[in-house]
Image (cartoon, rainbow, N blue to C red):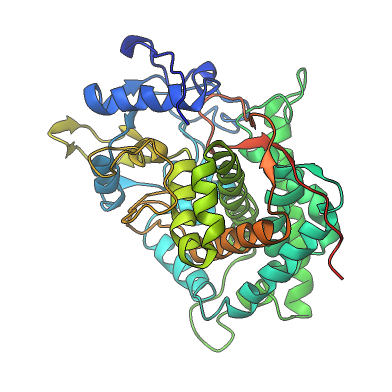
Length: 436
């Protein structure tokens, strides 16, 4: 399907302006294309995001950032963590105190050696073998979700299908009661919303809303951790709390466990949720690709999932900071310079991808950076996310074969959103009986 594009002049492109992110996706992609071609490391003033300056009163004044839009530059920065660190801010363009950054970023806001230690402990619980039993439960949870909506004939794809799957899996994994799902969902939406009015009502202090969401999740996890410390069960929380009991240096602090939980419910939930929703939107807009997938689910699903992640690029950006005077792409930069890595732009780079604006469910090879570029911060949950997406798409086309979007997605509105989020996407399908 071809889109009509209203080009933005190169001089008018401002990635820190919330109205840039409200433009149709093809227009944004076209703006990034011209940045890659003419200003691949363009400099911008920092955006003003509600709650983004929480606790930052004593931090250095904003100094702006360089937008990293080419695949090669993004990959180079990702592979050089000693030159381009995460610990000074990875999920916020503006500097935040270390404790606040860690609360909302956990491992992704750390550098070695602490990052390596924490990631190593968690990674041993996220191998395909370690996740085998959990992966088996994805199918059961997916069918439960479809059962709840199958008879309605119409639904909001985000709230009825895409959001519940990854978040329920995370709650089950951690041992958190499903009754807390609405609270966890709301708080994760607040943290990732970039100030969207749906989650930040006018007249209320955005910093209080953001901190309140983080503290709510923190308190929930602290309470569970204390209970599991005394009465361990067969869940990830118990494993992390009692890691190191056999003498290994694997013991996590309560703060590390709680911050990891916030990372899971925010980043782990949003990646799958956003990718699935963009996938449904694109499969509706590209009926030829939809038919290719439906006719050969076994053969095409693996490449379709990768293409959906590439096309959606669920994480908009991560930030790195120069630890010393460095050279990148033939240009000189100084210690403290900020670099914002735009994954969606890298995933449209025609130096790497043939016909990058085409949604192609059989694209191969597909070295996208939708789960991050190679380096120490590559997404630990990529294997789980791929499984969740594969199972949901398979079951949807088996049980609701004519499901399709009926309108354009309602996207997050905010200045430089951390995620390429969709809040709502209406869909319709022929009502089906609930599975017995």
